[in-house]
Length: 340
Ligand code: NAD
Ligand code: AKB
Image (cartoon, rainbow, N blue to C red):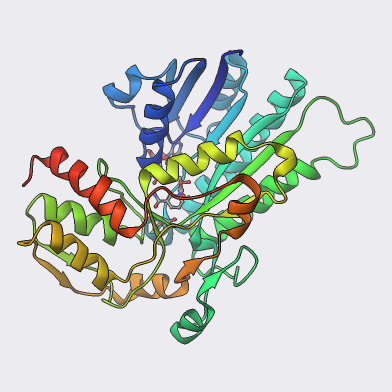
């Protein structure tokens, strides 16, 4: 087997840490990692090459592209929903123009190398937009096509990027007389909120779940910014990383779509609090809803229908709600903070 070269953008983020660690334990992979922020030493050591720079800087991207032939690009760099809503024009630049720059890099590479380059893209449940809470309750589990009417800049950016990926894969420069070389093999998962035991998210709207757990483990009081009855889907970080890897490894011929929902568990904020308090009985968690952020969560679905991913590439989460806490989150977060 040949050694594969993999580019990870946004490698210093939550998912990036998980992916880089996975590849570090596997032979025959060269990870080229890039992020706006300088990579921490631990992550840096696990990579073949590390770059600090902006995905909006096309000269910077060109310099990376001329130095490496990529087999796979994991494009993770983005601004998440709350941050994107506060800085919509910057978010549009990073989430849309940045993605376009990476797709251009990928198509150029595939044409020069004369082979397909895989492009793995994490989208989000933010692509959905339910008009009101009654409709949200009634709609329940959504498949990939229902209610894709996002009401946030981030959700709009993600939905459009899914479609850009499909364009680059199937219709790019469709008027060219002699299309040459390889193509982009675009594959996308729509993630729920991810919960890691080792990193705290910044700038997302699903952040209340990981924050609740981490604050409890640090014995810090937590004011939860959502209502107790708020229900959106979540997933343990190892399953999130695994979903990306599994989709990347799937045979192209088995994929009937470019975009796949992946689900795992879907508790209310009240149920999350109860589960965190079971692990950390002295945790102080109070619900103090931020009405503006709540509106965003009320437009996201209660759950997702991931039967297409299960059928096409054998998606199945390892962790349900109880197992995520019992077998991963609680032991790992305790060890991380040295808490009891
Ligand atoms: P994160 O915020 O932890 O990491 C994103 C990384 O991108 C950061 O390290 C940041 O420095 C980098 N970045 C931002 N702007 C950049 C730029 N202009 N140039 C280069 N790097 C830049 O996010 P994450 O949780 O690791 O998410 C990774 C991807 O997964 C994102 O595309 C996100 O939308 C998607 N996603 C995440 C979740 C989740 O719950 N974590 C859910 C759904 C989808
Ligand atoms: C966010 O809250 O913005 C992310 C997501 C669900 O995409 N965690």
